[in-house]
Amino acid sequence: IVHMAQEIKDKSEKDYQEVYNAIAVKLREEDEFDGYIGYGPVLTRLAWHSSGTWDKNNNTGGSFGGTYQFQKESNDPSNKGLHNGAEFLAPIHKQFPWLSHGDLYTLGGVVAIQELQGPVIPWRPGRVDLPEDMTPDNGRLPDAVYGADYVRNFFKRLDLNDQEVVALMGAHCLGRTHLQNTGFDGPWGAASNTFTNEFFLNLLNENWKLEKNEAKNMQWNSPKGYMMLPTDHALIEDDKYMAYVKLYATNNDKFFEDFAKAFKKLLEGGITFPQSTPTYRFETLDSQGL
Ligand code: HEM
Ligand SMILES: CCOC(=O)c1cnc2ccccc2c1N
Image 1 (cartoon, rainbow, N blue to C red):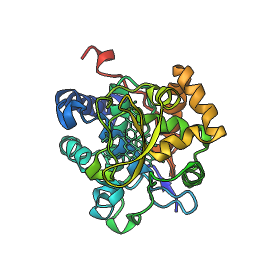
Image 2: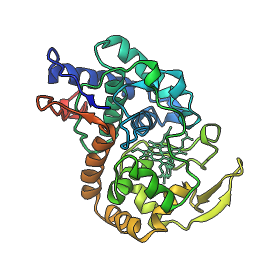
Image 3: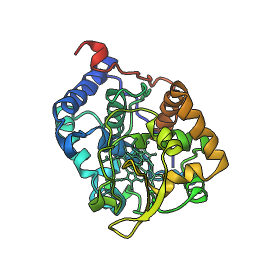
């Protein structure tokens, strides 16, 4: 299967910046969601989950077709809680009906990272909605209970290497686990809505203890009230991953640079863009003085 992005001839950078701003203003205004964490983290996870179904071996799934809009995908147990992000974006789709669902879900993640003071994520439009029968099967997203070998093997399907995997996992600086969504919980003074390299500093500096949580899942907890999933902790159990954890803990610019590249690659997996498709680097509200 080839997913050729369509050339959007009648929309300019200004039009897409207008969509960016509409999402960003709504994000700024609706700040009370999830105990004042806001919608940034769940929008980031929605962009990742709508892209993370891709299988490079047969080019099925991925962000192109916007199939998260169909219940077969949004009801995947792996997607529990993400309806909050989709409901947040629904009015944006009404306001800009010309934007495909795939472009909407991925753009939502770009706005979230940038408005939470993360790096600029270059983004290209042209994803085309696919019919419901093209929705990938459930079960393509990763479980949290396994170790480094599982993580490495899982991300091979998304064509992502060790360095890209560690950079991407840095997005776990945002938001929190919710027991009713995934069976993981956290004593949550630590939940953050600012994009930093803190995830890597925590991994290296906290005193982690493996404990069974209220849902009978094992997770790593620290006396200061932080938590890590087993797949998070795996990054300091494996020498190759550990090297990148140390790099990003000590070099925030390098983390931002590598995260931006890897997140773009994740959001574009499986898509062929025509030469003529522009790459947009959006302004944040702050940088526009808005
Ligand atoms: C091995 C790979 C991964 C696993 C097993 C994993 C697992 C999880 C789990 C269990 C949660 C808690 C969800 C909840 O309870 O509501 C979570 C949250 C989150 N994940 Fe991941 N994740 C992975 C990779 C990623 C990647 C690659 C990104 C983005 C680049 C990401 C972004 C997020 C964000 C932003 C949240 C917070 C969501 C919120 O606060 O509602 N994760 N993840
Ligand atoms: C920087 C403080 O946050 C963390 O160390 C951290 C670690 N793993 C997570 C895994 C899933 C969701 C949120 C997570 C999270 N917020």
